[in-house]
Length: 113
Image (cartoon, rainbow, N blue to C red; front, side, top):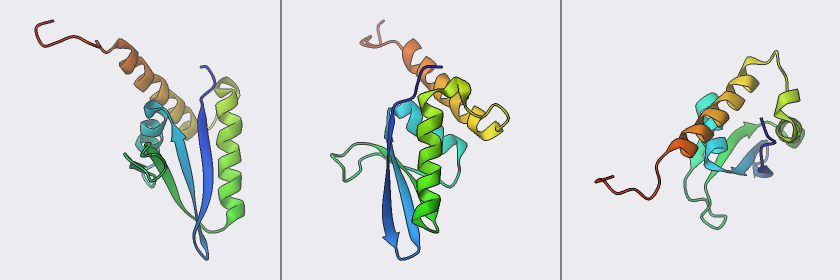
């Protein structure tokens, strides 16, 4: 699998609550929410109305930072990511499957074909 492009931003929500915002192509965003039930998708964020996913409720900035850094490293080379981590592999499979569906979808065809 090719590297996955995504931007992760850590935000402080409350005194003891941090979220990680994920900005990426639709296949990546949907892959995250399909794999991790506690994440949620925002179709039009306040950031230029772009879609994003929110990974909520980290108890401190360090936990959020570690989670963010893990995905940055894994996305640089998905083929070297944790092979024994079923959730990580599931996410990459979902991203790949969503990309393949979009690549195979007919575009620009009307209902008459």
